[in-house]
Image (cartoon, rainbow, N blue to C red; front, side, top):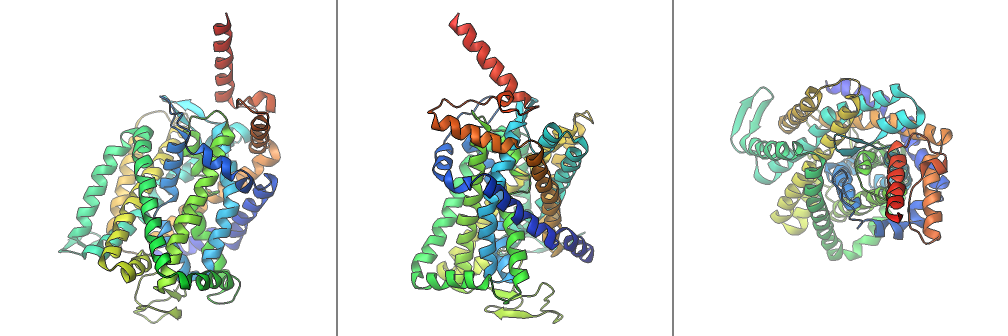
Amino acid sequence: MEALVSTVNSIIWSPALIFLCLGAGLFYSVITRFAQVRHFKEMCKLLFNSNESDKGISSFQALAVSLSGRVGVGNIAGVAAAIGFGGPGAVFWMWVVAFLGASTAYAESTLGQVYKVEEDGQYRGGPAYYFERCLGQKWLAILFAVSAIIACGVFLPGVQANAVGNAFTQVFGEGNMVVTSFGEVGTFKLVALAIILIVLAFIIFGGIKRIAHFTQIVVPFMALGYIVMALIVVFLNLDKVPGIFSLIISDAFTAQAGMGAAIGWGVKRGIYSNEAGQGTGPHAAAAAEVDHPAQQGLVQAFSVYVDTLFVCTATALMILITSQYNIQTEDFNAATGAGSIIVQNIDAATEVASPAFTQMALNNVFGQFGQAFVGVAIFFFAFTTILAYYYIAETNVSYLNRYFKGTIPLVAVKVVIMAMVAYGMVNSSGYIWGIGDIGVGLMAWINILGILAIFFVAKPAILCLRDYEDQKKAGGPVTFDPVKLGIKNATFWEKRLADQQALKSSESK
């Protein structure tokens, strides 16, 4: 299985995908005239839009839901893996993919808003919806929907759950060992699994509203707490900070650990973490109640900054400042002696693709409290990410339901995602992360090629940005008329505008 996963990964995550991700981000950055920089102040202002409705969630809640997917184990274990396999220079490439990816996030999230629909009393949207409505390619929409259900419902939840299990083991030990079909599993890990499954079932059976209300409280709190811990580590080691930044930048362009490894792992973990271009963000963006699609596009662009430039950088600085990391080849195995360690600062047997580097870094500064803090942070980071994965899978099941009627698929995806959480938690195989990478890569290939095709066919995201900028410059109020802009099949917004005009007409009488 591990060999098969590795082979499939090498095909999906070929240099072509890496440069496609960077190229798409650069393309949309130039086309939008670097909107991720020009509109930074507007992004911050839009965060606090509280226009929640019976059918939609507020901009902040949509940000929280999308951040719950972006801010996950990738910010802790993923950054550690990037450094462990790609060297400190991988952090630089994570920054690059975040900066450029913010423009990609704007484009895909704006498209999610433009082509959203009202289904089952709530707003839904995402790549499947805009591929069908803008490109008119139902086959591509169905392909993405199926890929998203497989990735978010089957492949990715296990990664988050696996990291939770490892973190609990780091903090509390294994406990008494129980023999299962997956080998021996510690009782502490089983207790953690039971807690996750009970709470997960309660929330996902409550729909997007319950997910949004949970994440809008948990996500800001956990992200802020994590960043504060990192700032304390930085403050206590201020003299080392200039050297660390110098190391990150210089290593990004040297042969240490292979320049290709630094770029590859930086981009791979950057996309895995911030999800820009992956096609996951537009699902939450489409559920937001806003006056103009560009507003939610800008909010989602800001979420990429929060994820990578804040949270991922916090992790990287803690690991590098305390030197609690090794750099090794991907095939390194301490037991067999295969592969090699390029830089060794800690025990060679320390697992790279895990939260271990981060836990050891905080343990170095805060003692056992630091290690326990990472365990708690991973629990909440991973749990909220699993909620986001469920919502994405649910949205794509809802899309496919127009072709395959019935409630069974929706119930099935709830059961499957809980089963994969259980599998990921008790399975110690290293290929769990590889399976997650396959899921990310599949969606990224389809979505990035799709949004590039959309630009050359209709340019809706760019038209929205220009329209929003013109209305803001004119002093408002901000409205959205897709017909006026030449945007077709934005039926939700056409109906909304018609209803608003009818209401104004009746009031004037």
